[in-house]
Length: 470
Image 1 (cartoon, helix red, strand yellow):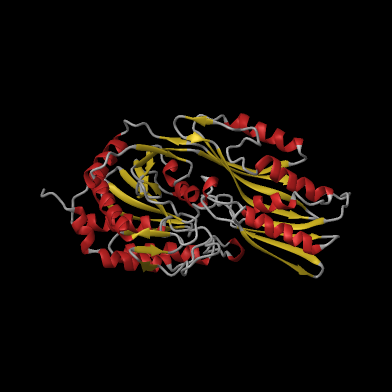
Image 2 (cartoon, one colour):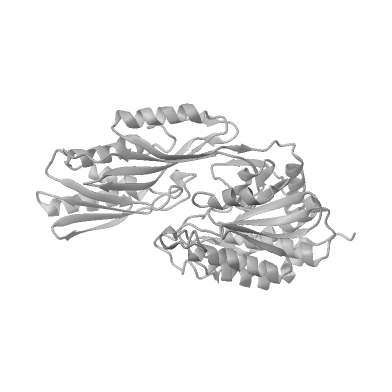
């Protein structure tokens, strides 16, 4: 068979690819359980994004299947073996501070901007067009190729859990939801709440912390926080202290009085929870300021735990679980959600990513004991185990060959703190679509994907599908 120029095939379809991606990006597919229905269990926008991709695939001649409105797939080829391409169309909330419409799909200076442009709608559309190219070229395949579309990757993975209860497990596969070249090791991911119970006999002080709120998701560094307090004393001095604190820490924020209560708002910098140091946690910074005030006993306990155990301790030092290995690096702690109410107590929503050799059972015991020392409880604990595929696996060898032929660069094996659908497979890796040297803007404001990278990834995926399924 004549050698295929995969880049040339992608360029023939460039305009169609970008147009289809724009339509997908315009769908606000953020988890919305408050407005969930039986036929849209994760919300209307999430279902709309899933159905958009299924309808597109059916139109292009793939076999399409909706699996309980939680997941779906598009399939081509024939044979007993199944190659899986695991993608997702849900996105994290857009957050604040965008300079463009977060659901506009605008192309500016060679980049396509939108929430989900890089995580994971852009790479998903690249993989879709890769399948489309192989199909349209009429290449005979000895294996089936199936794009599995998830809708709850950014939260609880109910999509893949439901999907694999009803559908076939692929022989091998990849997830276009992280970095190139190839990620063969992923940290374990545990989410849990560190809870401060309500206290009926709260010892009063000059100032009372009435409420505190920061963050929407475990796996995001919060970019906004608000605290409401009662205050006895000269407000002008307090406001000046807050202004000075913002300046010292190069942060933005504001304060105001409403119904006799003082409101403090602080803006941080959002980032993916797998590396908290890439952001500025608005909630933790605001507790740092509040720690300078004389607060009611219960509010002080909440603030002190944040400052003494969590602030600037993203490697788990404060919780006693600092750990590192040569395969996946440091254990990390992200404080993704912080809530406090004077009447009902408070909680910290933790996203902990731990190395493949970390003993999670002992780690959980340590965290529980540390929380208990301070009068806190551990609740809502969930754990996704680490994932590691051997470097000599057939899948890895094939993808290395493809990447090196397409880019001329060595296909090094990487490990990440992020969790991708690849861990759902015994032989599964994350494969792109963030190229080496590119900034990681996933989960951040003004998220984008360079158009050239989108096209380059599509060519890589097309050859990968061809090599794996022929």
